[in-house]
Length: 463
Image (tube, rainbow, N blue to C red; front, top):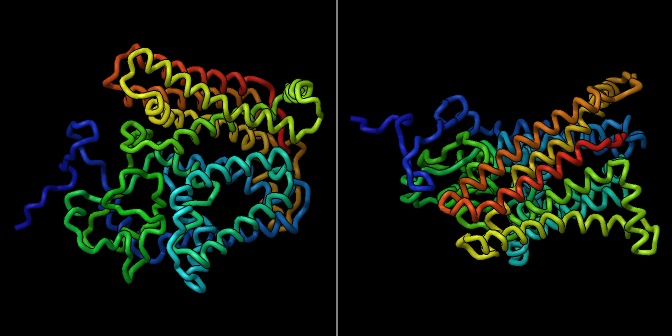
């Protein structure tokens, strides 16, 4: 007689010690489970993306040098880049499962890979390298205009392809994705605040002897991101590739939706590199917006009067460093003030822990900035897509809506992000005195106000 408890009645202890209902397991739907266990997932998406990606690179390198009329530029920076944070919120790191770099890595390793272990240096400092590459790529865009240059964008993608091939020839699994991809840190942080999680069932995993989720089986290779489902408590390094679903002999894997930001509330092992990146991303959002403002020229002149040079590279570098340092300094000062006002943890611990609370505001700032480009340049997506069919017809304006409408949407997005960060702070400090939490709440309010203020100023179009 089957005495199993129906899944909808299952309860599990939550992170804060209460009993809560298990979220609905998407894999309990036969069609979803069958599809994710088949060779069609994620392969069917991967091949579609890799074909589109190849055409985009071709158009970037060989197409028109006019960014507003280049199919590759439009698909990369007007469509793909704004969609990325939305995907991370809704589906975790699903993009990483279908990313052309990941598929290319799989192909290279299968054909000529030596499968050497990942170097200890990359294992230890990979996340710092990811953060550094993200900062450098953003910097290079402002200095050399990569986004506004189809050739620059194409060459950047080809450099990344070269890195993928090189690491895949020498090292196991997706070493590039795990330790070198510029998008990895962004993907990890945003996916922590996302709505999708993949986990193992603890009672089943603890008695598993095969460890096929990590080691792999004849059905699929082991986790490409070096994760043990049994111990995985974060979505930051889960690509939702489905390998563990295919390999698990015990039907332990659960795929479910959750409340956005929930993972941030109870970070078990907060790390400095993740908190620092959250603060740096906020600074990068600031500089992305500031450089589009009419006052940007005046800011450069003021910096130039101090440096004694009119060099754009030197003066922008100073502005860039200041913008990234500002949120870090503010977070550090807030952590110190919270400790003085009764917060039990050390300053370092407060800096690291509450740095994660900035992530929802990072997402909002990123989305708000990209929303401007999507709406003010959105027609380029349609008209440049028609050029693939040989139809050329460009409107006088690429805008979908007036700027005033964009600003209202930006304000609304920042308000949602602010609410997410405030609620995250509240959940993180539910055992702390309200007085000691005031500096943290104040920091989130200040960051939200700065974003709203920057979005309230007139911005120039990119193309």
